Image 1 (cartoon, chains in turn orange, red):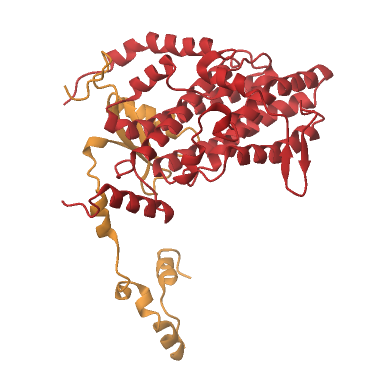
Image 2 (cartoon, rainbow over the protein chains, first blue to last red):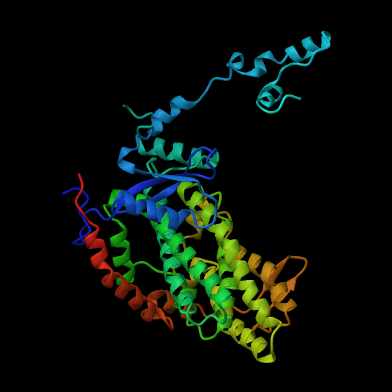
Amino acid sequence: MEGVSKMTGEKTFYQEYEVFSKRTPNSTFQHQFSLLAPNEDMALVLAQENFMRREPVADIWIVNRKNVRKMDAEEKMTLGRLDNKEYRTTKGYGYLKKKWRQYEQQVLDEKEILSWGGERQ
Amino acid sequence: MTSLHNSEEEKLAHFMHRIEAGDKIEADDWMPEEYRLTLIKLISMHGISEIMGALPEKEWVPKAPSLSRKLGIMAKVQDEMGHGQLLLRVTEDLLKPYGKNRGDLMQDLFNGDLKFHNVFHMKTTTWADAGIIGWLVDGAAIITQTNMLGASYGPYGRALQRICAEEVFHAQHGESIIMALAEGTENQKAMIQESINYWWESLLMFFGPASKETTGSSKQDLTIKYKIRTKTNEEFRQLFFDKYIPRILSLGLTIPDSTIKFDADSKIWTYKQPDWNEFKKIIKNEGPRSQERLNLRRTSYENNAWVRDALSAVVN
């Protein structure tokens, strides 16, 4: 039987769970570490005991490791990027700052645009 | 999928190139067996030492002199067990090719095949010992652990990030106990001095002998070769002297070694070597409290077997 240890009575006690948590309701989930637990509910309890004794925490996810599709070493090699994608970033439009200055206007950069979510200045 | 690095030599060359470039090796990556075995030995010993180290400290939970001291030392004991969990997890992933798991590591401990740090074989007699463990034993551990934060093995480095953050609390917890005693009565001051006298040799031994000639084996060359750590045992010990001797002396305490001195030009401390034969006995589980602590662990493992059994529902 899969997962049966040499020691009796430990058939599925040592399942591997990956633990994710977020610090605040607005933050993204971050991987913390893995732990061993006999089931999901115990994994949640142990996740709190093991990894969240001090830091603020707003939510915890646990995932059985067998459900995680990982990349192998060769697949990771597809993650490299060619350094020719400036048209995808603001870096490719850097000349606009100077242009707008000629028209006595400021460029609407990331900082300016993201500030529009706040109060009207 | 075909591998880009077919022969063992090519795999090894690629692996060493990754390490040299500062890349991190992960559990599922190819690694030379020597690297895997070095990590298993290092991290299983570290992990089980965290757990065995909680035993002499937990003796002081019922005897702590105030409620706040009791809460503080309880939190520390819980942290140490948590560190053990993290490190055993890292070890287990490395053990997979050998078909071994945590239960096997416990058996290795009970059989004497898996060692734990020399300091945790010693007895604790007074509350000052609890303080010295936090201040100087954890201090010594911090010296070695911070050196491995950038270890080539990613999971160990990440575990150490968590561990070292908590060790800062442990060190200050120990300092707080020692500071209270150092500013206390003559008896309390004498208690710390006795404790330092008792622990000094163990603290020197903690970093291991300077070379393998002393005890017949040492993993320090391999751990440096594979960029798991960067400093030698002796460099760790010298750093420990740098950081802690001035602090010990500032409290009016003395070092129980009349020969110890610092050479300002070479920046080297010369000191009396601990009894390395005693060290060899201790790490063979023949120290003052080795068998008591192992028995405590055995008993709790046996007494709690029913919990593992009850929660081992078969799942598919």
